[in-house]
Picture 1 (cartoon, rainbow, N blue to C red):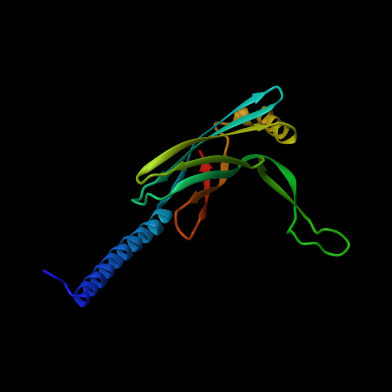
Picture 2 (cartoon, rainbow, N blue to C red):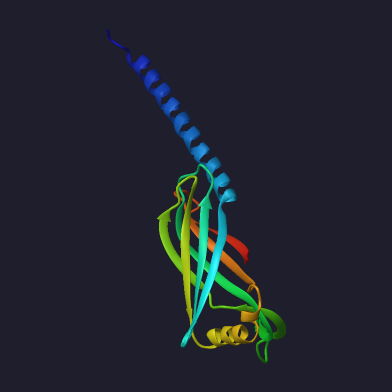
Amino acid sequence: MHMSRKVASRILFASMVVLSMVALVVTTSNYVTLFAGIKNLELRLNEIDFALTPDGLNVTVGLKVSNPSSYGGFELKSVYGTLFYEGKNHRVMVSPGRTITGGAPYQVIETPWWELPPHELAVNQPLPPYSSKNLLMELKLKGESAEAFRDFYETLGKYQDQINWELDCRVSLQTPSFFGVVSIDFQELYP
């Protein structure tokens, strides 16, 4: 049995159309689950523990990053966070970031929130579907930040039932798409 060129080209064309449609359906489904995955990502602050040392302060922050979706293309790149605690009122200079002729503008505010230096934790691990990663951020503080916390703890903190902590966090994920690296911001209060 011999097939004509015309029939062979029609079969080849139909095969290419079917394969293209299958590839398009798979890609579209992957992008739909990508958006659902981004929307459902979770970050939970599990614990904060600290130890005062003679030369500073060690703070351990336990985090849990979860992917409760069916999307399997996430790679957890890093977690970047700034930790705050509620302590004694103090003055902070705030700058809007623009300069005016004759000097930089600034504003001094009174606030009970103390900001510890930001920290970045490199992870570089896949975050499979329906999975979680437990992470530990360890901050070792010296100098003014450690002394401010020691002063707060010695005068007020150890007499309280709990210390109020706040974590501003950015989770960076990479996906195999045109998005590249996706950063998602979270804010958590503890306890």
